Every structure is written in structure tokens, then in C-alpha cells.
Amino acid sequence: MSLFRQLLIVCLFAGLGAAAWTTLDPLAGSDDGTAPRHSDKERRAAVVASPVDFVAERVRVKAVGTARALRSASLHPATAGLVQAVNFTADARVEQGDVLLELDRATEELAVELAQVRLADAGRIFERLQRLSATGATAQVSLDDARTTLAAARIELKRAEVALADRFILAPFSGRIGLTDIDVGDRVDPDTEIATLDDRAILLIRFEVPEVLHGHLGIGETVEVAPWLDAGGKVTGDVVDVDSRISELTRTFVVRARIRNPDDRLRPGMSFRVTVDVDGHIHPEVPETAIQWGGEGSYLWALTGGSARRVPAVIVQRQAGKVLVDANLRTGDLVVVEGLHRMREGVQADVLPPTPAHIGPLPVRIQDAGS
Image (cartoon, rainbow, N blue to C red):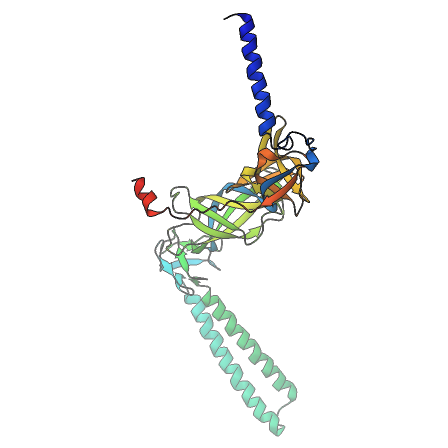
């Protein structure tokens, strides 16, 4: 084919393309071609738009937590003595007031008996002087001395009873008792640890959170914890304590969450995976379909007073079909989600109702046709 014929064919196709563009462009003018082209601000476009919401960014914190019982005590005797009886076994259930350990108490029992005798004698003397005082046969000072002696005897008896009670180590609350190295015949004193007692119906999970989230995590926030050895055994709890200080070494602060342990499968000292969602900064929330991409990055089309404007938008976070963006949007703005190809700066938009998301069941004949 000669060069002249090739040039002729190229020119022919170029002319046809230009004619088609002029004919099909809905913004080019009227059908007869006599009307002038409108400016961008005079154009109108039918679009579907969605209102802008303002939602807090969700920050997910993952940490390692350690459990302790809600009530836990290290048991020590109040006084020194020889062990006469150990009334518990490891991991046994004990009730508040149960006698866990008994010390030798012969001396204390004798002291109680002696105090009782002295109290009875002081009582008799006081009653006799009281009768004599009524007839004037004794001085008032003698009666006062007898009253003081009686009161001192009562105090002495109470002191002896307390010393006797200290020979028994009682459970301060109901729970599970731990291991002990104490045997009958051992000598113990207040520095000797008898055992530990835990009420593990409720556990406290201690974990650390970065300082940047201080003030965003408060009491009552929901947390999810799972033992490291049982990832499927997730338990939901709530925050009960937030530390008031930031560690200078780790730049974190301590949080404690409370979880229930009704089946008693969790133990104090266990480690847990801790997950908590924290509300962060507030950002505009728009549908994902509103985000467009160009040479300068992501952007969207916003409608203010029906007029379109292009707004740069940096995606901050995605949340279930919507995105949080860092963009210059205000309350009352709409963002275009359908009809984006018609958008130009300053275009006046006619907002249409959204396309129904749910499509009803197909007619029976069409369903059968696909089978």
C-alpha cells in the first residue's frame, strides 16, 4: 500500500472519531450543534451520595498479661510456737474461719483459766463493797478501787483469750489453699509462711499499654483474654484499674482487667494474650467506594451546597466497608459514591436515592433456567 493511501485512511478514521465524540458527548451542546458549550459550573450531574459520619479511630492493643486472684493472702502465724496439727491439703477448698494450723497452746489455756479466776474474785469483791457502800459501812475510795480491779481483770481475760486464739491459724476468706512445707513438730514464727490462699473465682489480668494511649483506655473498657496454651478459650473481661504513672524504663502504664473463672480452669500466675480495642482520634468516615486515586494520591468528591469539590483524602483505617480518612470534610457534607465519572470541580449535582442493596428472589422460571 502506498504512503498516500495510508495517510488517506488515517485521516478518514480521525475525522470519524472527532465526529463521534462531538455527537455523543452529553456536555458538548444541543443536538443541532448550534448551542454553545456550557462551562463546568453550569453543568449538572446525577449522582448518588452518602453523608459523612465522624467516628473514632479503633486502635487494637495486643499485650501479654499475668493473672492473679482477686483476693490472695500469704498466711503467717501471729506468734511463735510448735505445730500440733496441719488441717489442710494442697489445692483443697477451705471456707472462711476454717482452722488450718494449730500450735501448742497449754500455756495460753492456763492463762485464760487464771484470768477467769481473777475476774470472778474481783467481781465478788466489787459486789460486797457495793452492798456495804449502800449502808455507809465502807469508804467510796475502796469501792472505786474494786471497780478498777474488776475492769482490769476483764481486760486481762480478753488478752489471754486473744493469745489463745493466736495459736490457731484460720482461713481469712473462702478459697483454695496452696502447698505447704510445714509438718507437725516444726517450730514457726511470724516470719514463717504457712501457705497461700487464693479466691480465684475472679482473676485480675495485669498488662502494660504504650503511653501514647494513656487517657484513651478507661475503667469499664472491654478486653478479650486467652491463655497462651488454649488460644480457643477466649474470655471477655473489663478494665478495673488504670495506673496513674508512666514507667520511665518501658514508656508504658499498667492496666488490670477482671475476668470470671466459674469453672476454675484458670490459675493465678498464668500468662494470657490480651486484646483490647481503644478509641483513638475522631476522623471522617466515608464508604470505600467514594475513594478515588490520581497522580497525587487518593481523593474523593464532596458536595457542599450541591456543588462538587475535589478533596484530598488520606486513608487512616478501614472499618467494615467504610474507611476513616484524614480529609477536609465538615458535618453536613456529602461524598459521591456513584456517578464519579461525571464529577468535575464546581459541577452542580442532583443527588439520587441509593441503589437498593438487596435484590429479591428471582422468578421461578429464571431460577429453573439456571439449574
